[in-house]
Length: 485
Ligand SMILES: [Zn+2]
Picture 1 (cartoon, rainbow, N blue to C red):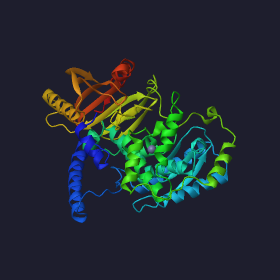
Picture 2: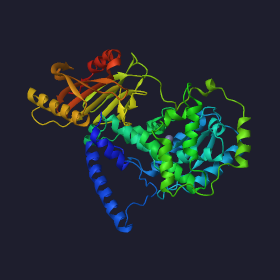
Picture 3: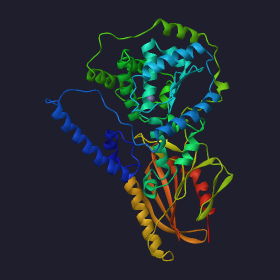
Picture 4: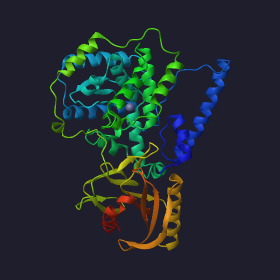
């Protein structure tokens, strides 16, 4: 569902790709900036070969740093209610001290985040940081660390996600995905932020904030390594820890950590490369402390909270496809139409581009970008010509298909537009196929109708393998449409 050629460039820029217009602009800015920085570097350092530590710029983000803090705080309050605490003041105090030592070396671009560090009584090897700096470390993470440097490494990795604002970068991408992977959203200038912010504010509904792309993981690794290095810890500890927990789980379920932090390729090589860039391994490096060993023993002695009583892990990646559409329907009223949708789906976005999708219906594709895999997108776009003229509908529909294909180069027309009726009005039905973010092929059923407000498009999306299970729901949704007279 993406303009493939632009993906790499956008990644080089460290910018989240949202829609063609932004991507194209970003491409030029990026090239220009790169060209300029190369020229400048060559002027300043004559041989132009000297390696430097990797520099970062947070990716494209629709939220402000203050919104990161507000949003993170809101979710943290919810998380604290849902997660079992260690109830060990010494452990929290230790995490806080270690955390602030690392924060002192964290580049936050002048933003003062209200960092907080909490111990969670969960044996799963995991840690996570919410936007704004609310860091939660599972007891399992502390227990799995061989030394202080390894625990510092996990925390430095998490803190880097905060500094690089990866949580709201992902939310920006998810928001873009609602308007048909950004294309419609970017063009229509939809204002989905408010709705999504409310949605994200609930920890159980979260996930979006904590599911990072592989490129974000590499960035957090590299920045985390720099933080460790500057704080005097063994900078190799980061890759060592992740390698170790992966190796320990061979043949079993991978650690929970990897469900939110997908393992990037060449992790060890990338960390080693960064250490080289910073001038190689320092002569004096800290690996462990007596304090860490004491804290680890205290954590090991904590009572175990059984997983069942956790009410399921709210941050775990949903396994398998989302729940099937409910047979009960909720009603949505737009200015131009009324429609119904399964009451276990949620509404995202507003006004000119709205998506209805089940929990887990927006997924990260193989390219690491978020896309709608299950659900319906309804949009209203400007159409030129006489609304009562059949040619206007045909022309506007072709333009819509071209627009969709521009943003989704793998999209193919499976069945050319054919006549249908929607709420008694003439419409066109087109069957398209595309690469699904859920893997494999997806079907996109496009229904278009001309109204005085413009071209109203309904895009029904489901992976090919599951389409049969959604077909009836899509038909019911379209049957429920009532245009306002
Ligand atoms: Zn991560």
